[in-house]
Image 1 (cartoon, one colour):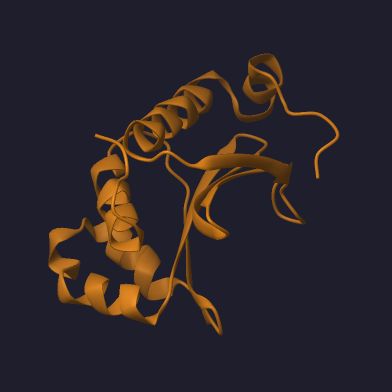
Image 2 (cartoon, rainbow, N blue to C red):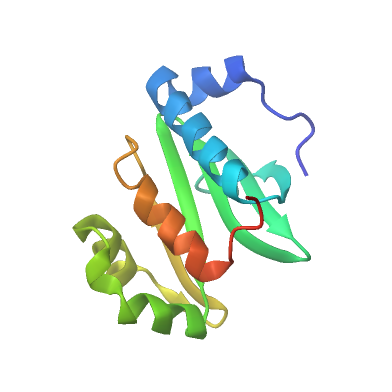
Length: 137
């Protein structure tokens, strides 16, 4: 667990103003569609912070932050991979590339995106819908 949740100033210092805006827009988009528990943690070896969306013991997705970089991770199990593969043509090239290059572990396919703008957000929401139906109107 984190000793202290980073504030806006600390996040801006870490990832930069434009990426902090992307981070906030992505959080707002997820919050608009999903009522989840949000948990801050240390980001492991590769990241400074992890911000996880969970409910009922299951993780929807996680955002990561490190110097001048934001990460968005979603993990697909077998059923979710089948759903994605059925509709993969509906996704942008970058999403398909990340999917194809993502390593598959025993618990699923770990897809890490590093958005620099909002261009993939529609695809992100579509990916999240495969994982879990939105629970906010």
